[in-house]
Length: 52
Image 1 (tube, rainbow, N blue to C red):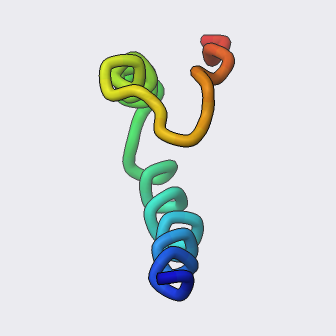
Image 2: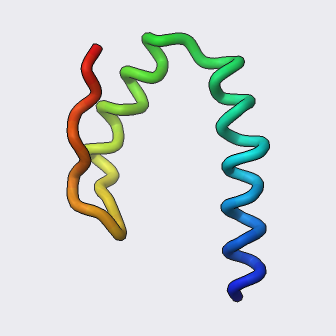
């Protein structure tokens, strides 16, 4: 399971995030941030709001 978690983190950091930054605009990031409140958080408290 540890290897699967490491693999997932690697893919997020090396593929998902860089691709997201290239393809998404500021308005879309704002919508994503607002949607996080609806979904909630698993391992952390609610983070500090982004300054826009």
